[in-house]
View 1 (cartoon, rainbow, N blue to C red):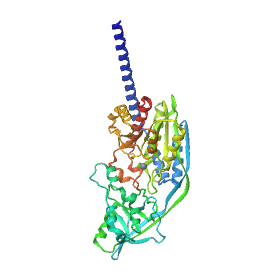
View 2: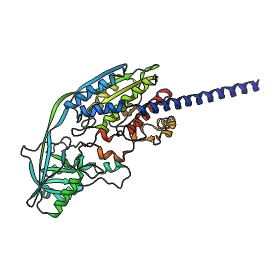
View 3: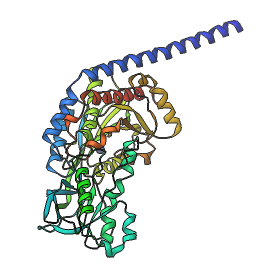
View 4: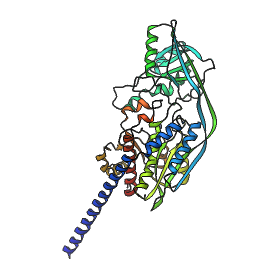
Length: 460
Ligand SMILES: [Zn+2]
């Protein structure tokens, strides 16, 4: 009797082990098929070309952003998802009406500088403004200089990104205060305008934009970004001469209400249609940028997950919901609208996954969730280490999915090799030519594999 029971237990254990091995083998076979499919397909790269050539500079509320929504909707539509719809809403919209300009005057000479408006910058009068240059490297420097030294000057924030950092995002974080808060601070001391050194790891002529904010109640002043090459040049001219002046011109406006939308599409779950896995990226890009890495590539990768699932006949257990967010760059309005919707909808979200780190070589996934979820996902994605996806662990999800944290939804963000990211980010250099189809598709395959593994095995 005891012997028979032992035999039974042994058989059940063996069977369970065999089933587990079988499941792992199926996973490995499917992941291999996903990678083969992704790497040999040109569809998403061609989609990216279409998006960036027909709708570059798709800042929220712009004509290009409306066009982008239609282009992406048509691209998704070709894959016959179960549902596709626009989540429309009204938002303020800041725009650059004409290119900003800057000229430096010293002695009897003048030279024009490569500049671009920073997000939310106000206009100068039509004839522009001229002021003496005051170069500083920190916001705190203005405190010691005081209003007398700063008043009516064009403050020039010229602290470079620290290239000794091995992580470019760390270098970015260490310099971003100048772009984000420099104008607001300089305005408090009576400055006439601000020039900010572009946040780039490269020395070249592309100026980089990005959002800046003014403190409540501060008189807003024009805020312009200058290329790294010209920041070095301006600094040199300022050291070698006295009374160096700069003329700047900025022409922007803010519309109170523009109509825009998030784009949503779903592959319905075969067993649990009420449970959702969100995959997302953002459609908008800066007015000066084709937005190939940021974040056209992310949009096309997520759309391609649908294509891969269809072509490989992978029927998801849960609903896979593609959310292409509007307006990550300026007000994050799309992510707020989607989070409000999730709050009311009350459908269980298993995870949310975002791709917004460029169409660059993928290294893993950052996970913003409790330890047990992180452990489960790490275990689940072990087979991906063979594909170079080794950096999966506690980390950052993404700006667009961040508000979903309030509902306890795990946030997962694709991590890429970001060494070259700040050569492109928020500049006219963010072109399709600077995206490698292979690297982008390795990212697509990693995301599709992650979705497949979580959908099939769960994370509990
Ligand atoms: Zn982005």
